[in-house]
Length: 469
Image 1 (cartoon, rainbow, N blue to C red):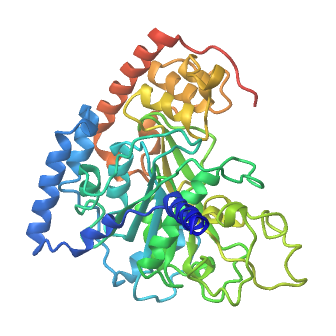
Image 2: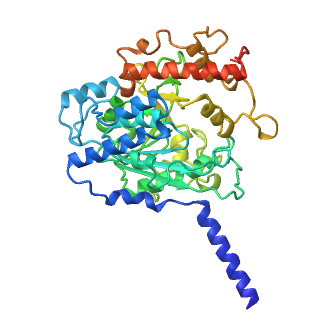
Image 3: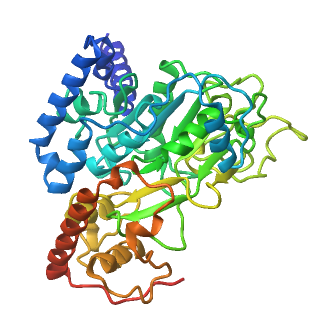
């Protein structure tokens, strides 16, 4: 009996560990049952929730209060419904991205997914404003550790003010917003085959896929994976939902099914824009090529790190790396969120040669938050024994050095990429984040971060080194 009891306890312990390694907060489903009544009641709930957020420490600066307050009455130009009615306008939009309009009468649904952690309300609000009313589902996942497994406190617990604000209608009156939790219990993780140390990120993103499937994603829908600060322009989202895009046609072999944008980089503020280098996220793919949605009987399985991460060599880790598939294969493995984020096999999309998305890079509330990011996430930069490396902010990364020089009006000098002359005005006539068209917000954000930089330099000094090109 004693032996049987020990076996039972051991099995129970193992079961508990398996559950705790991968936990989804069931409470995040509760908002689906809320009935806010008529539209005016929904608007009232949004306004009262945002007013509450404005009194919280999350809205700790003038620029944050300005952009958060904008959420109460944000109406993007042209509230586009599911039905496609402006054929001439849609045809012109499609042509501007190199696509054609082929007579589609209803828009594709878009399912968005991202990890979330210390992202400020600068990025959350800007993202919500840009995509307002276009996402079917927003699936966010928060973890109790950083990507380097540094413990952190959860900001987006079920029914917290942050979650209530995101579910209040800021993404649109019919968009379902979820924040699920991935709980890391500290058990050993097998990183074999993971060259970039991203397996924690991949494990977390797998919950996005689970949420999409629960929300009824189909092969005609689109999956969008990115970080919260990586935002497709509203114009491109509408094109993707409407146009005849080769990667979204039925009958995909799923070898190269991704679309990625030419992404304009804003460093810390709207007036600090990187010249000569673009980012290449977020990433978009048809549901037909998504694991768990597409046809698993037609597409072979790929072996991966811990079943969710990087593909092993021979299964499409690189574009033509398929030696472990049958010779002359015409169908290729379906994509996990890790593939959508990182894998090759994509086409870059621009609008007449210019950008089609935005990266609001390092849009944190303070330099303290920025230093925490570079110390504890995949950009980790430690001193001895994991302590903070007490160096000038610009020494952490050339992107930060560019921002510092932008705020202090120093010459770019040694930087491999300069900043755009003229700041935000230099992109006049091109796609701009809707949130940045508020001049008061732009001025507030610039002045706040300038003062943050000057205070940081008083402690850590300024960086005068060089970077290898």
